[in-house]
Image 1 (spheres, rainbow, N blue to C red):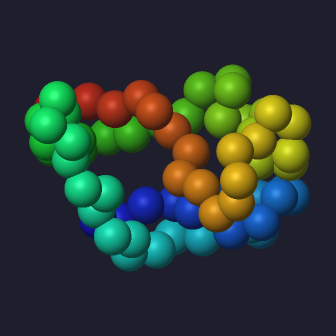
Image 2: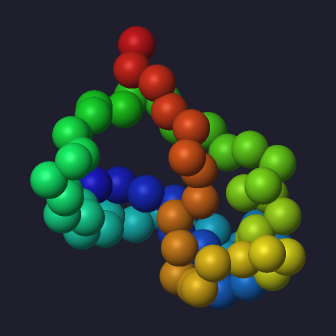
Image 3: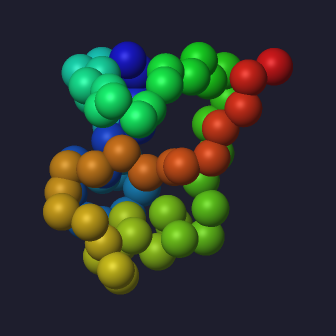
Length: 66
């Protein structure tokens, strides 16, 4: 799948558009096709290092299918 990846903590240059492996589904998950994705204020604070998950990570937990 295609994703914007935060490769290290910092400003906008740390965002990289990459092809990443689709994570495996667990028994209680279903695949959803997303056509648009967004980031929230939490994602904006994670990129420079505030309350950040381990890098690399893919920000954005919001999406929709048109």
